[in-house]
Length: 39
Image 1 (cartoon, one colour):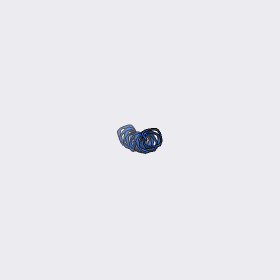
Image 2: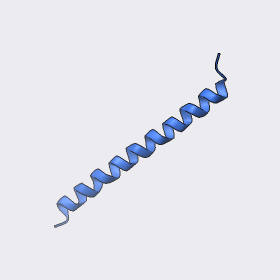
Image 3: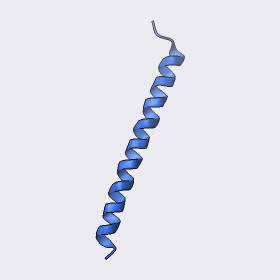
Image 4: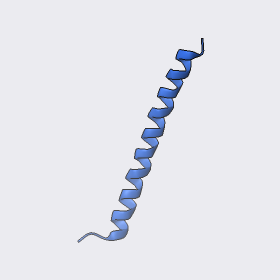
């Protein structure tokens, strides 16, 4: 049986890194979008 705090911190860490990746990808696509229309 796993410790709930360990599971909780594991989930939190994964969620944070997932959000970081999403923000990173979103920023890159926004920059491409901006370059495309900023001529």
